[in-house]
Length: 309
Image 1: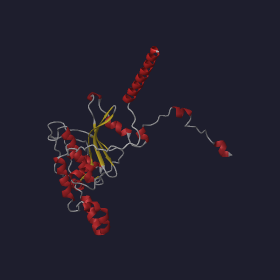
Image 2: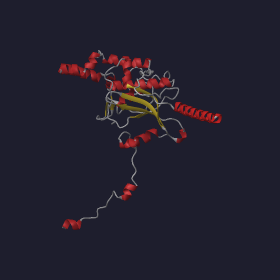
Image 3: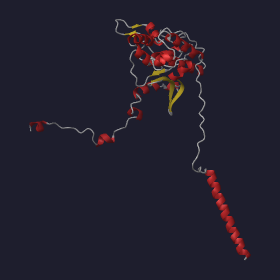
Image 4: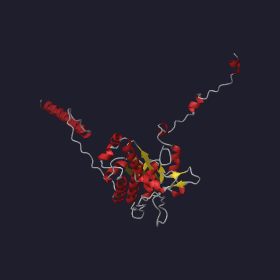
């Protein structure tokens, strides 16, 4: 009884006024696909730049592929300037391991060389031909401004050493200017008294040394699991001793020819119909005109026969 008397006023929050003023969030926010706070910052363009596009290096990972695209926003939707995918690396000799850090670097490199060749800037900005893991700034010592874009990682977590930064590093080494620091690259250690970035560690990650080390470890510990887990690597002739050489060849092949091979449209055989084909509008109008003409001819003939009688 005492609790009933001491109970305070409970305010009803979701009343009629609440529902009348409720505004539904954007569809892609409801689906959990787009971070509109980050998107608004990425596509914001100064008014004094008029209609100049603000390019984004959009990177997305799936279970079996990596998507890297150069995109700019317009009022009627985003437009894709250029794109590259990890499954395209099969053309350059890399058929397995298409979602690791090394493949992410190759995808970013492919995108950078492809977009620069499209804009006829590939000869002016070669980037870093030899992988060394060091920081790269394409704006330094350049006669003209490099192609600039900003990294868009979507809903991914920006953890140190994440594979998504492999695409960033590949694009920068390919000649595209993307503002960044070394604090999220593999090899950066912020636990020390002074921040330390080990470029050699990053270089080894780019050339697949982490995969090779795990292959050697698993081969010694459990040969059966090694053969099972790396079956596609072994079938493709990829072992722990030749991974670095393979990735170097892939980098060179991408620089030689980054163009996209257009697929020929598929030709489908004509399906057999089991019913009558539907007449077109032109055929239906022609049939109606013919019926009218036959009806008028029949009436005129009857009138002539009546006059003769």
